[in-house]
Length: 218
View 1 (cartoon, helix red, strand yellow):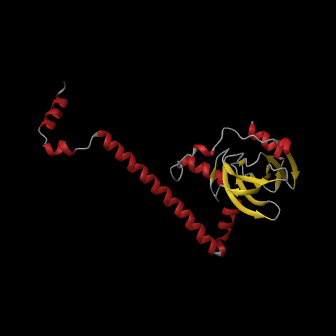
View 2 (cartoon, one colour):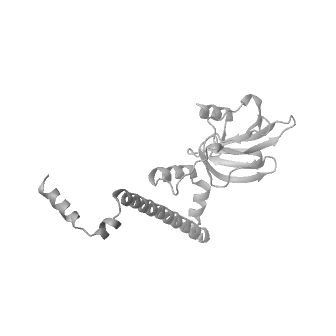
View 3 (tube, rainbow, N blue to C red):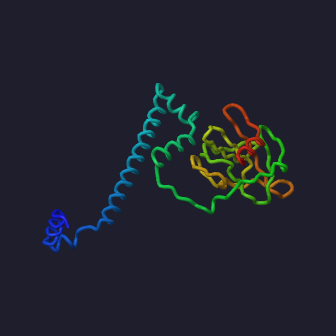
C-alpha cells in the first residue's frame, strides 16, 4: 500500500461520525448530478421554444416583420424541424411511447380503390382504422365540403398527405405522427365497408398515390 493511500485511510478514520452518517453515497451523487443535468437541459429547450414563439408573435403584429410569421407557418417543413430538434437537441421534452397505437406495417389494398379529384378513395373493412403511411407532423385539420374531415400530415421531404372522409379524428394539430399510427376511422360507404380519401401533394403538384404507397412499402 503506497503512502498516499495510507494517508487517505488515516484521514477518513478520524472523521466525525456525523460526516460518515450524512455523506451521500457515490451512486446517489451521480444520480443527482444526472437529474440536475436533465432538468437544466429541459429548461434550456423550453427557454429556446419560448424565444422562438415570442419572435413569431411579435412578427405577426408588426407589418415589417410579418413575412417571418407567414414564412414560418406557410412554408416551413415542420417534420424536418422536428428531426433537427430530436437529433441536435435530443427533443424538447421526454418522449413517451404508446405501443398499442402502432402496428408493424401498413397494408393498403389499392385494388379496392378509385380515382377521385387529385387522389384516391380507398375502401377498407368495416370500422377499420385509417393508418399513417409516414412519419410526420399534423400540419392541418380542416373540413372540406366534399371530403368532410381532413387530416394533413407533412413528412420530412415536405410532402403533404391529405386524408379525407374521416368520421372521427384521433390526432391533434402539430402532433408528431409515427408510421402506422391511427389517424381516425373512415366513413361508411354504400356496401357497409369503410372508405377514406388519400392524396399526396408535393409543393403545387399532386403525386401518384400508387407510386407513393409502393415507395413507402419498400
